[in-house]
Length: 69
Image (cartoon, rainbow, N blue to C red; front, side, top):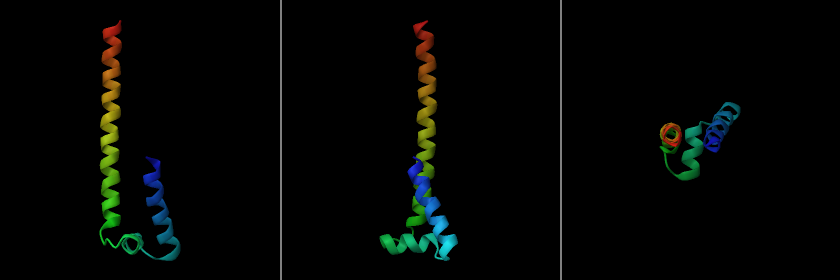
C-alpha cells in the first residue's frame, strides 16, 4: 500500500524540485491528461476499501473469540 503513496510523494517532490507539474509528468508518461487525478482517486478508494476489510477482520475475529469461549 505504501508504494502508492511513494509514487505520489515522488511526483510531488519532483514538481517542487523542477517546477514541472505532476499532471504533466503523468500525461507525458501515459498519454492520459487525467492520469494524476485518477491515481489519487484510485489510491483513496483503495485505502477506504482496505480500512473496511481490516474493520471486518477485527469484527469477525471478535465474534469468533466469543463463540470459542
